[in-house]
Image 1 (tube, rainbow, N blue to C red):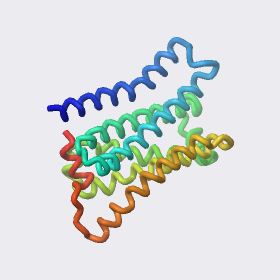
Image 2: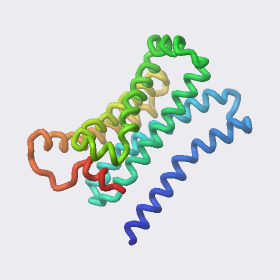
Image 3: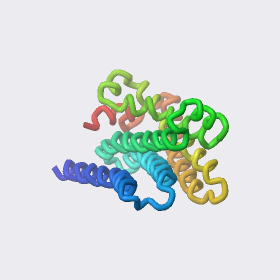
Image 4: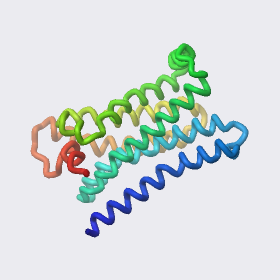
Length: 214
C-alpha cells in the first residue's frame, strides 16, 4: 500500500510539474505578460521543457536499476508523452508564427538553418515513440518495442545538438544537457553489451517493465 501511495504521489507531482510551464505560457500569452516578444518566449520555453522532460525520462531506467525500485518505471511513459506534447507545441509555434503555416517556407527553413534541421529530426524521431507508447504496442512489438524506444536517446542527442546550434555563443546550458546525456548513455552501454553477448540479466527488460507498468 505504501508503495502504491508513493507511486501515486510521484505521478501527481509529475503531472503538476509537467503542466505548470504550459499553464504559465497559456496564461501569460492571453494576459500579455510574456514580455515584448511573446512568440520567442513561447518557442524557447516549450523547447526547453521538452528537452528537460525527455532527459528526465531517459534517467528513469538507470534510477530503476540503481535503486531496484521497479515501480519508478511507471513514470517513464508520462514523462515521454509530456516531452512529446511540448515538442509538438514547439513545432506548432515555429510552423505557425515563423513560417506562417506555409510548407514551402518550412521546408526552406529546415534546409537552410542547421539548428532547425536537427530540431525537426529530433521531433520526427519522437513521433513513432509517442505513437507506440501504449500497452497494445508494447505487447504487439515485444522485443522490437525496446529496440524502437532506444530512439529516445537519438532524439535526446538531436535535441542537444539543436540547442547547441541555436545558442551559438553561450553554450554552458547545452553542455550541461550534453554531460547528463553522456552519463545516461554510458550507463546504458553495459546493458547493450550484455544483450549482444547473450548473458542472462537479473533485471527485467525495458519492454517487460513497461508492459507491467500499469
